[in-house]
Length: 289
Image (cartoon, rainbow, N blue to C red):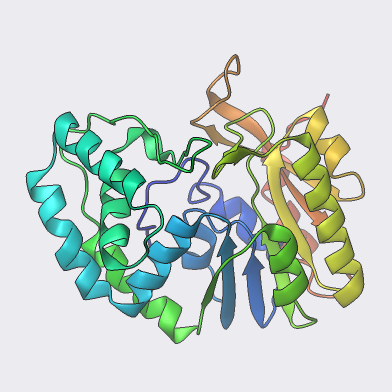
């Protein structure tokens, strides 16, 4: 299943490497749902998908509640508003509607996402969406993806919550869960809704994940960039090495193939088998210096 949204840092390409590390559980909790690639490419009985971006959660919830209404509301924008003038007009309207939620905002969010630059979802300090125009010849309209997403979310009784990661972990995890965290990467694009996600936030996430793991004895899996900062921030995790494509590098950083880590907290049960999890890493090990 393909994601509905274009998403910088999405996990579609990483899934063959990530999937063996996602342990069996009754429910997968994601405090940074983003483009929802992990949700779409796994088979947990239940999900809790969270983010602090109210537009993202409003979009997903509206898709699940009324997929055909989202399609009908968004399709005319894709057919008749494919110029930069149209894009910036809708972006301005979207900023002025930021206190509203519901169908129209969900439709325009999809339009902005598919017409904006490189799958970015960025806001200024006033909470206004400010991604530049993407100049795509014919943006793809994801009608099939909307319907499939809604069907899977209903079948799995998925809960969408707009909460900071601390509250998601505190209120939505129990002993039946596994946790997958995909925070903004250090040394790649670090924007996270309005405020940047920097060293202090990574340390707070480490503390929250560790506390959740110890409290419930649940498995925790995290994706991150293969950098000294990541190793320092998530000290105590077990690191497994691979690579991905960093399409939205921070200023001064190179794009292209980037070192990546899949970090896990040790658990007594639900580990991926050695042969399954480590087999592909034999050929793709990246030495950390």
